Image (cartoon, rainbow, N blue to C red; front, side):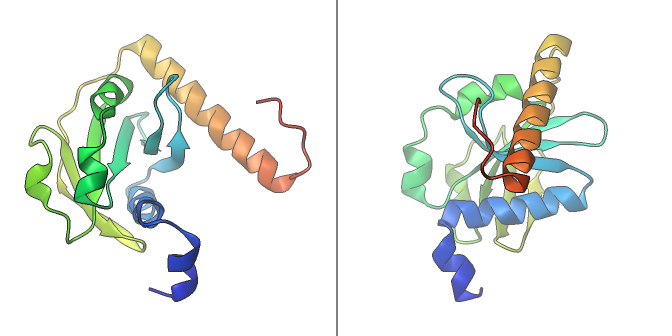
Length: 151
């Protein structure tokens, strides 16, 4: 891995980058660090070609996973929930009833597909709006960094 990228980003951010690349190869758009509800911030949310909503939590170490007390709160905000880890992570720690993605900064692979629990239509509408607004605002700020931030 080029040293400039490793020095610029944290391990979890590098993993999120690889996850986003993999999701893109599957036809998904993704947004990192999305807030579905107050007190929650998911590492990667993927929006699929059929409107499916996936959440991926990136864990860079055993300690990172063990300190995560909010992950079950994410289950109500997606159709499928995944953990993303690198090849050295002790995957036996991860709950069997969740999906598993293994990757690095350059790509990833789904090792275990997460079970599907369809979002209710009203919740899906909220998530699609949140995803769209977050992505659009971030693009707008990239294009106009001096834009007053009213959000």
